[in-house]
Image (tube, rainbow, N blue to C red; front, side, top):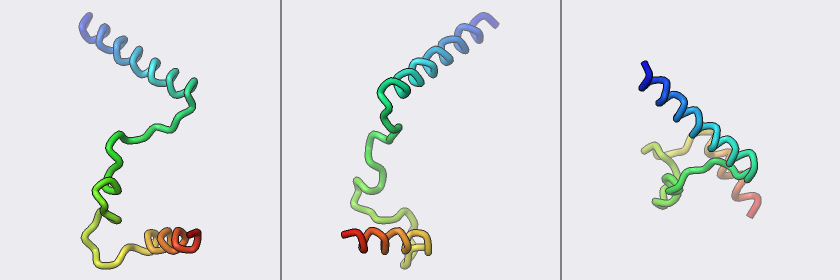
Length: 65
């Protein structure tokens, strides 16, 4: 039981430290590798045509540029 409590306190301390870092730096939480965009892929699925939500987003991006 003592090991469990020590582990719990440790994890809570780490989570608290990460929360303080987020609060003070005000940076968005993001991935480190860039996801599939870093691989040059536009979508995750193997579909020939993107879904309606994706088509709408692509049209908005095309209209902005």
